[in-house]
Image (cartoon, rainbow, N blue to C red; front, side, top):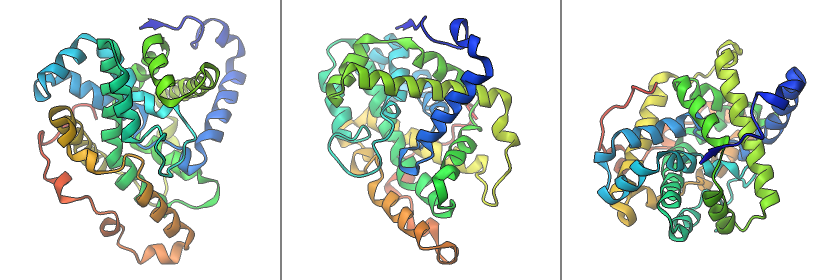
Length: 311
């Protein structure tokens, strides 16, 4: 991978200063303001999860570990890439960027070790989002005010604020690199033209950079806090479930626990949207923990006990 010299916060981009930042912020918020378009785990958490794997390769299958060890940046890029395709919604469809079939096709189409590492990163992302899309986000959506969905974006920032800034910075760096091989592969799998993919990647790249900048400026910390808060303990617990699903997948392949669940989270996302539309009084009387209960097979999957160093 090589640095994309044609973009960045230096050079020509700095000419626009605050105007550029406001324009990008507006575009990003416009895309992410729709609940079904917003990301689950943010880029910071996905990179932190990928970094954990790279630092603990002895916990996964040796053949895969060798590929990831030789191509770490491609793997991290894969950990981010499923979220490039903003706007796919949460409806179940075979060509959804968060569908297992897309991840498997990406791996099947990878011919070089670099693209294989990318594909494993893509599949890592999907395994992590089993937790985010089925349990984390649906519960929060139930309590997020319905108008315009901006609360969902806010929850994303609130969750990712617990991740150390270096992972956001790494995410920004990785998406600013060129990877023609992996981009060509995912475009082929997703049946996207270069122009359409390029536009989506540009929005994603700017969104990650803006998020990195906002984290640096601590804008999320100073934003008004909602009545319902996300705690560090909650995020660490859910992240541990995600990491264990990732490790299980990279150890057991087709027998992995994560493959039993939908990374899109279609059923629970629809349920959450219906609950939210029913009104605040109805939500108050619901046991959301029970409605979106984490399956025992996930809870009992403990390859690691407690990963907190990245938070």
